[in-house]
Image 1 (cartoon, helix red, strand yellow):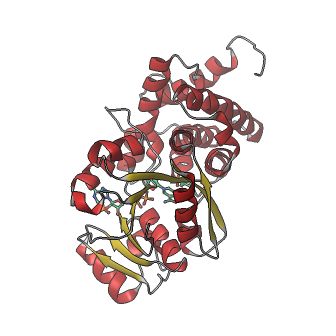
Image 2: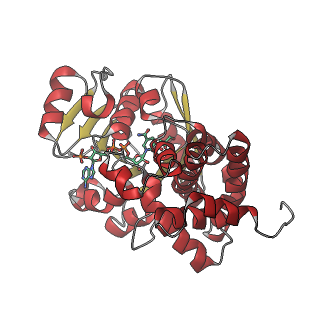
Length: 328
Ligand SMILES: NC(=O)C1=CN([C@@H]2O[C@H](COP(=O)(O)OP(=O)(O)OC[C@H]3O[C@@H](n4cnc5c(N)ncnc54)[C@H](OP(=O)(O)O)[C@@H]3O)[C@@H](O)[C@H]2O)C=CC1
Ligand SMILES: O=C(CO)COP(=O)(O)O
């Protein structure tokens, strides 16, 4: 498997940060964005100001609007856009190629994970999932970051992890693709909840209780969906859950804070909120929990708030009055 060149699809914060990580790892990187002005800026000024402000980009990154063949493809568009972005690519670019899925979300309507979308659109592609505690700004600035890279073939996954690893970006190879995907998607739902706890002024104790119960709920979801709950002790589980559920830097946490202050979803979005993947993923996760008969009161609570069925006070009172139970 040749792993010299990388095509990153998506010129937002995460696509640009992953392009930077790959360039720092010694790969030749093509960053594919649909915005011609962004292409000009990246190629002439080595910045992508809309995505990452003044962060200087590595000279090994070149931008384009049209994807060219590469040894590795990284998909870095929002979860709800993955299918359209794949459909716009020449299928030959994906056939038998390692495709790294980096979006954290479940698809509206189909309830699909990112790798299910990929295999639907490009059955010959080789899916890998990259997830873990990693803000784009940190990765792009070369601050130390560690993530999980999950794939079906252990030796291929280790080779790919080595090809993407650089001085400040450390992928750990893993084999539980489903567990990593579900963890990455659900942590955004719980980050909305934790942000809401902060926005509503419910205190740090409540937030930590929420994180711990979210971890237990996530384990039930992962197991029911065919993944391994043990995966959640790693970077994609505990690592990303704690980062996103405690950082004001997280867009999902910020969205949750606005909910906690009493703003409606519509008002937050029309006020220019950045991408918060948990908003689209919550109803999908709620539907999956119900169809799989998984006890998921926290996902249901976030769904009740997002859909306007209940306010935060009512939802918290409901959670606190559930029958007492053993912790396991
Ligand atoms: N930012 C972060 O710190 C991290 C993000 N992620 C995940 O990465 C994913 C992307 O997030 P992020 O980059 O931050 O989001 P951004 O909002 O910063 O960027 C999204 C990018 O995707 C592009 N895009 C949207 N739809 C399409 C499409 N159909 N075809 C091509 N390009 C498209 C947008 O283009 P345009 O501007 O033209 O609309 C934009 O460049 C999310 O799932 C997120 O959870 C994961 C880890 C860290
Ligand atoms: O996934 C992330 C960090 O690991 C980014 O989180 P937000 O999308 O909430 O900003």
